[in-house]
Image 1: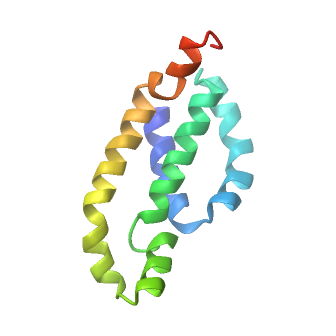
Image 2: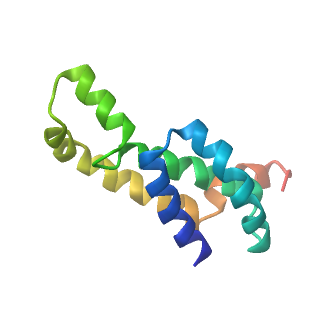
Length: 114
């Protein structure tokens, strides 16, 4: 339940905050909660970054959408339709990263670091 709520909060904040600002503000709050729920810090960091990047693409205020609209001279609503398949794929990836810890920790386990 903690990871689901964390995903939702990070998606919302990732869509309205710049990634570096979100890291500075949220990491000191999220790390102690992750420890309390026994989430590996590396796994938590990967979840954090994946959610913030997905939030950058979320309509209506994702920063990447505004940058793309300005760069390609397209209206925002047309970009919303174009980005939807990618949002679904990235959303599935974020869920896999969140609930399959071996996706982010597997290589460390193979190397004997975890």
